[in-house]
Length: 296
Length: 341
Image 1 (cartoon, rainbow over the protein chains, first blue to last red):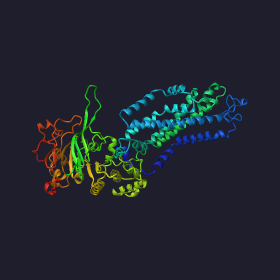
Image 2: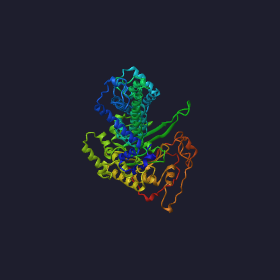
Image 3: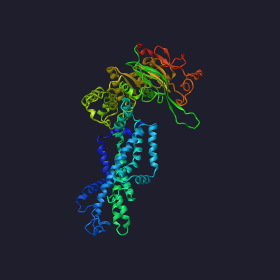
Image 4: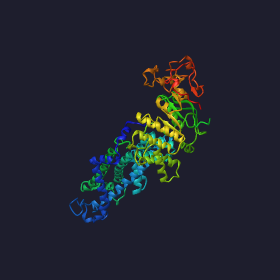
């Protein structure tokens, strides 16, 4: 296991590992654009609604279906005369929160399962990985919908449900890495010292697999946002009048011909957010590529 | 003579192979097959053999890093063969390992201070961070590195320096037994000498007992008090270094020695070229496992695996033929006779 080709040039690396990764990331233009978009989105969702004269639930029946840029509502208004921009930003708060929290939970679960499965091969590891396979067997969208139909929808339950269908990939990545790493001499050394399993897993192994975990976590944000959109669009997710990007689409489908902006704008924002996170993930993958600086 | 520090009896490690057919019996790879030896307190026992002879497995099994299939391991008078992990932990403090690969043996994400602190965190949890730091700097000093090395990361060091860090990690908690698993074979020759000298120096200063695993006979001859020669998972000969180098008794040892190049053209020796490959450890030959390649093999060699028996005081061999006059790499008068323990 030790002494693979990738290990050998380690001595020639300059000390500044993190700056090298940063340089590589900055060279990835789409990823940098993704970061800019995500930062702007988060800032807009956080601050934007406070600056607007309209509330997300303010109904103004005199100005229903105002087209974008054709009146006081910049991005138009919906069938109840609610301001679309404010609703988009308020929905963004919900959707992004679901995305990040679901990512956090799914990554934590995935890392835990992966560590245990990789470290305790034998029946514990086999049982855990078969569980992963079993969960992966379900088409996740149906699993999501079934679960969502069974529990009463709220922000917390939706987030949990999405997290529960997204941890398997992280678990697989971590398990594979742990199996490879625990045969390396430094892990054997820790065992020879008498370090506890927890110490070896968390202190010796985990820091060496942060790169693939970060990449998988970033891609999970994108997937969670998309999943929330599906569920809410199909009506099982965030319930009106609270806005989320998905249920805005749901609401818009009746007016697809008369007021297409009601569907186009939330759709565009979802696309923007998801692709941005995907680009960031790709950029991180390239920047943190273990072949780039394995032992540094 | 006091009790040996380590007493290994009949140690075997068989690895089950995946079944190749539903009704075929499961085959076993015999990495170790009935190995017995003692390591006396304060000695350096060399363990030589070609790749795949099981020498690394001896070290790992001895340290309970792999579970033995059969046999017993006694360490400091205590049977540790089946000791559960919890009870093994205090024992681990007294036995430590130095690795072959100086690149893979240090965690790339940890500073040298963290790496060296790990044994202290496990075995001396009462130490304050300041005391720990002092111990780390002392250990670095012991292996000839500067104290500032503690704040650096492994990739900032050369192979030889990393090996010194590995030695410091092994020694920081004060072990009695050091298992050095080919500690110099990955290093440049000039650096090898430095590390060998360091180990000899540390052994003298700290009174260490060392199991020195290597395939380089010159290095083993320099550092060891006694040498065990392994072939296909068994010890074929075990003797004082001087006795082994001046008068090998096992044909395999003779062949091994004849492969060492000499610098003296007058002392050209007969090269013994072994025929064929090492047999598979999955289905070793019957009787003596070396007989398929042994130039002196007789029909009776196929009958029974020869026991490791003492042919003269302190000189053990596993070969039925006592009538052989085998070539030695060093003629006897050059070496002073070493006194037996």
